[in-house]
Image 1: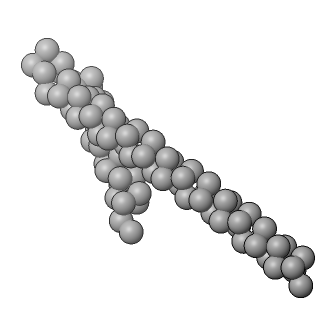
Image 2 (image 1 turned 120 degrees about the vertical axis):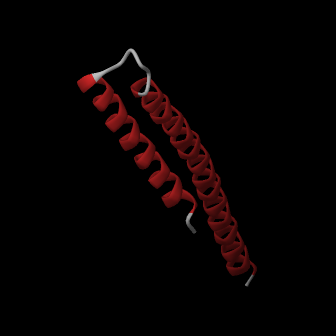
Length: 85
């Protein structure tokens, strides 16, 4: 009977170790993707700011503006997906 209890205890410990390591990995992954997404928002806003400069005109301004809006929207959506739950 002691062997059965030890085996189930060992299995329980193994499962707990696996789940704790998986939870730590998930938390670390969320932190990394959140930081990258926030950085993406800042880069997109900087691109929009460049598009609004008086020295940038025409197609360059439209490109910077559209690219910046696309990056901000993508990064904001990633933040929403990461933290919606």
